[in-house]
Image (cartoon, rainbow, N blue to C red):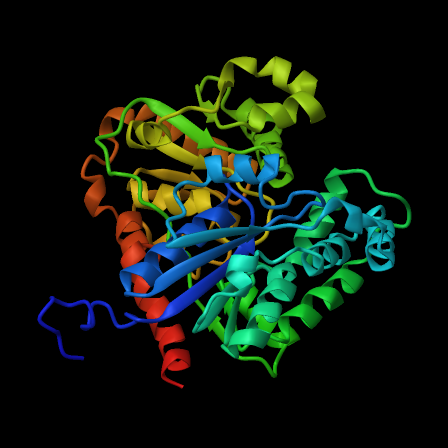
Length: 418
């Protein structure tokens, strides 16, 4: 493309200038999915497109102007769209027959049914409904598809769907951690709802290798693309004395940290580690005695997580549970710090961690404890040129913003040209 007299506004660096992209996504923040939404907005805008954001609430009564809307906006200021909209289901619509039917299933742990029905009943803002032109809808999570399809009816534009892992697996894991009526919702039933919603998309986008392979087998007639997420890098610091573990309060992380405390640490009791993040709350609820025994290790949420990574002697990834690609694994890669990790920490990434000089792999508790003792004994010898570390190079090739931007242009450009 030629550049005009105003610079490269319509040039090769901004090939989507003049186009409008709508991002439809759950009204979530402070999670891995939210970081994907943020990256999408940044990437499309950097390519020249105007970006509209439609945040869809997943609970009845969370409508535009509500307290939930205000709280969401306050916590998601990093999502930089040209115009932001919020949609939610009015509370009185809980009395509708289809919603009551879905709610009954939800009592048995069927999150697929309740989320689809909630989005179907969400009120699209009048200003968005009247928007003159949308060229592409990039939808996130299968249950946001009803909102995306209503807008596609008007604009006759393609819809890309980011699947964000196979959600039925996540719902089963959630039900294992929580309370439901018997019998619990079946994986097969929730998966069927998920797949039916996905079929309407013009292209299915997957964030990790395992997810892509699973959906290609489940939906062989659909078009698929693998696009790894962009994750903001941790600056490569000089390192310090701390052996750290980052963990938020989800069930998979609770199981991982429990394994570390009960199986690994007793084999290396002389090693001091720091557990950072709000995982402490999960232990208060699920394992108070284990928390009491190891209370000194839990340091809670910290404001400067970047500094914690930069100053760590090594980062621990004792990952035994979970599905989908791990955002904290990608953050750890970007730091260039030495890692002690299980193979499962790299799930879905397509990486072979055995090839990284600064990764100590351990497939069992004894191996992890041995690596922990070695790291504690050699802190002074830890890699100092972390900007050149093997893991940092892998991050820049696969998970950097520039890599994501190029991948997003490659998959979306044909739809704009059609």
